Length: 436
Ligand code: 4AD
Ligand code: MG
Image (cartoon, rainbow, N blue to C red; front, side):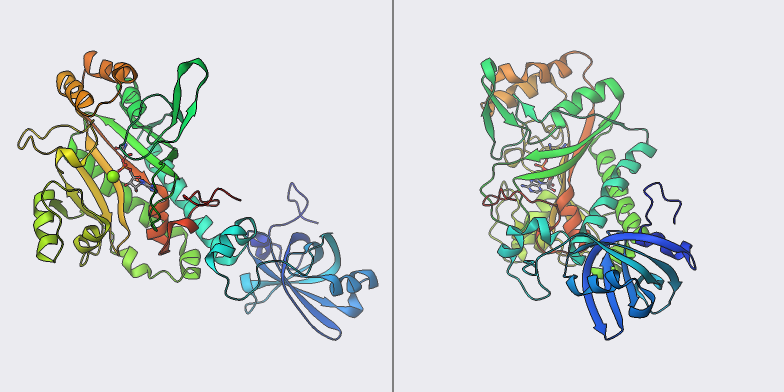
């Protein structure tokens, strides 16, 4: 038996047990038999393994159990590991016994045929087991780990911000709930405002967690619950902020190329497109961006936010993400710093992913002037009592600072090349989807 603390081996570890006997556990994906020899392919989350059962070298009960194996039956198999270059994972298992841990009726809903996406989403709890979905989960995990490593290596402190809040950050829809005698609580749209407070305590911080938008958007880029990573850096101006963003994105992409080739191949991602993602990223001023999209037929006017179609036009020929910077004040959130060179605009940027994936990052330098911030809060009719603490940050030792928010699921969609954001998170929350 193995020296594994759990007393069974993971399929991915099997090459190191060549010639030895091990126990494996997993779920059946395929079976086939030719009389006295049968084959079972199993999956355990670490890999795929072909098991060979030879009638004459198995106890009769084990051989008989082969007949009841269906897709998704959970099994425990003992056997000898044999190196075999043609087999998936480079090894095969010659079974010496087979036990059924959990049977699976023949009506397993997900079959190797085309299913509609609504059907698959209704069965998301089972759909997760399919090969493509496992590949997506692995890439997402790598991106999350790369995010944490990037900031850890740069001495940022992770600060976990609240999800139940009284203050709001962005303009888009709010989920509200009664909160005892305190009135209404809102599910956080962003951790940023808390991040700014923490930046004055720790200098460089980031928060990373779920955020919520009650947006009635049925697009391939919107979830009602999504994960956002938001760094906030004392003494960074808007230029430093964009520099940090391009370093961050190119780090994440390089990390996936380095460690997730197999998954990207499974997803049929054209990785040459990702290889091109190197710093520096192009920077286009908002006013120039408007002229560019107008020249391509868009009817967007100066002052409008840029729509999804404009974003696609702006990256049409780009081989890496593109910054659009310094948007008009009216198009953006109240906390962004007024541009001293053109007070109609604010010091901010959106980072647009190539290949039409749209905005993956929104960032800005923050308004650090007490009076200007107070004016913006009033102009936007935001409740002053909820923002007193936020104004305090401009009262006690105000400081130049900037930060940004990376949408995790949009980043996963872009890197994996998946057209719709709903497959980038285990259990997507969409306007019309709360189950499973
Ligand atoms: O541009 P947003 O709204 O910026 C903020 O929330 C700032 N407080 C961030 C900051 O400066 N700390 O959102 C940031 C990113 C977007 O670029 C997008 O990638 C993602 O979050 N995002 C969404 N992802 C999925 N579904 C939605 N409904 C999203 N809304 C925003
Ligand atoms: Mg934005």
